[in-house]
Image (tube, rainbow, N blue to C red):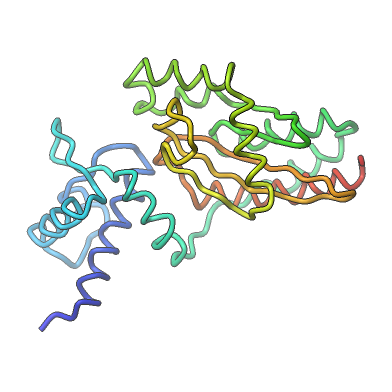
Length: 248
């Protein structure tokens, strides 16, 4: 008899690979692709059966124009809350010398906020936000054009840029609520703005000296690399708070 824990482990294993593959290239994932790419110890029929179960559970959805599936919002939430926490992924380290040299040259608060957002956007190719005392600096909005799924619906893309231009106060309110949290992840419409329902946002709050609080954040497609986003935010946040101690 196959134990339920074995079945769940197989489901989680294959689902995790589906998510990772989709994050990597944005293409719908088929059973054949999984077999070829990861050389799994399962037959194609077994993987297809698992994918059907995952679809029934609402974790993936079928793309009618192909034989592949893509993770749903529910699927990404399960991945972030359950599977990603169990993984010990190794990411390319932030180029410490380069980043250190940038922060050494910063001499003002405005420059600090601008350079922090620029570094985050450059490292991740996501839109970045640095928030401090109701002041917000956003960089890298052009990276949204790197993700075809965000370009598929021109209305959604237009609404997204409307948020950048006209609804920054609403964004500030959410960032303000997250300043006490080490890491908060909003997937799709969880952020509370209908106009950004196709993206995800990772926010990391911080406290600096003299009671100063703030947050750094990254916005990208729902298939953003959440683990790397969290790692980059944590690293840059340390640089930011250290420099704040010098400037305040």
